[in-house]
Amino acid sequence: MAKKGFQHHRLLDVKALILNLKSMALRKSEDQQRSKSARLQEIQGEKQAHLQSDSGFSSDDQDNGLSSRELQVQTWYTEQLNEDLRRQVHEVRVAEEEVRKKRKGVEKSAKEKKSLEKLKEHQNLEALRETEREEQKHLDEIAGRQRSRTGGSEGQ
Image (cartoon, rainbow, N blue to C red; front, side, top):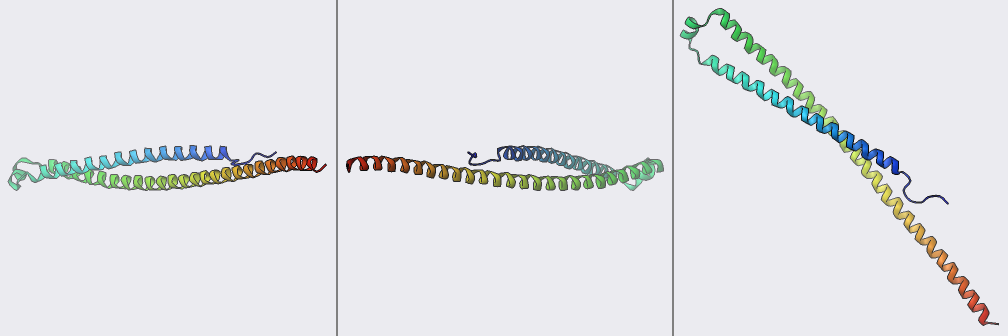
């Protein structure tokens, strides 16, 4: 006799495992994205502090106190901060895109697992109904035989 009900327990287990793995990968990507965003904030803070320290010098101070070499270093540092900012903005955008893609993957896996769970529920319910019908049919047959035996023996 063929087994009734849901036959794909292993598939459901695999879907659950895949969903868990994708969820963990999503969390890792979210952590990386947060880290990259925090680093971007740090670089922006460094640039703000640098620009504020530069603006504290008057033109007399710059003429008297800062050599052209120091001005070059200040300019180079500003340019380096700008490049770091551009690079970090790009890294944050890439990380955000990765998070978005992984989130979609998790959502898709969750839908697939939910569909399989609904199929399992439906097939198990259908199997239960079929079993109940078979049991009822069997009970009806037994009752019918008993009636025919008692009904047939009473007529003689």
